[in-house]
Length: 201
Image 1: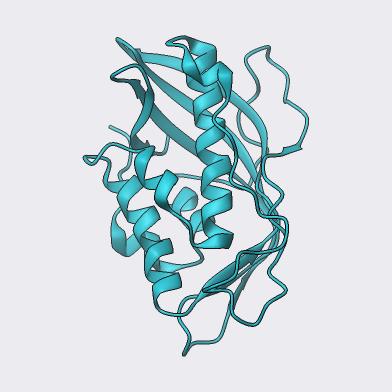
Image 2 (image 1 turned 90 degrees about the vertical axis):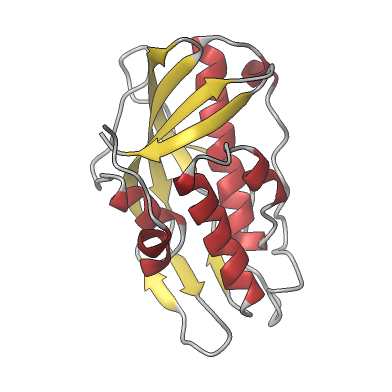
């Protein structure tokens, strides 16, 4: 049974990277692509650090919400992989903008890790905090069938340096750049992919 993410774990340290570590993440290069070779590093959003002193009300310059990929519109192995990569892109965007509307929609309500992660972002920005980081990058991915219309997608993600200010009255914390292992369990439901669990190996 994969590890589940609790709200307490998610809130312990800077937003997404620690979530992945708590799921069994590591700092190794992570999984290889389906072809057996590690994929090239490709930024998945263009979220540059905010230049404003009021990050709770102004989105970082260049932060654009990613579009839903055509490849993720099919109930196939490639569709599951494309959706998992899209989830990371949306997570990257949500962290630096505080806009979690799409992120909330991408996970089932029963996915405690999904709601905890998005809720931590909501709590951070609601308390006058912020996260500053360049975009996350997917270094490689590998997917395996986990059941009917279900896949486990392993992703190796590069996290740039991050600064997380959890609320207006605390000092920012710094997280050094690292590679992490992330696992998303996705299900095809009502003609769309959704995350039903986040976990580790």
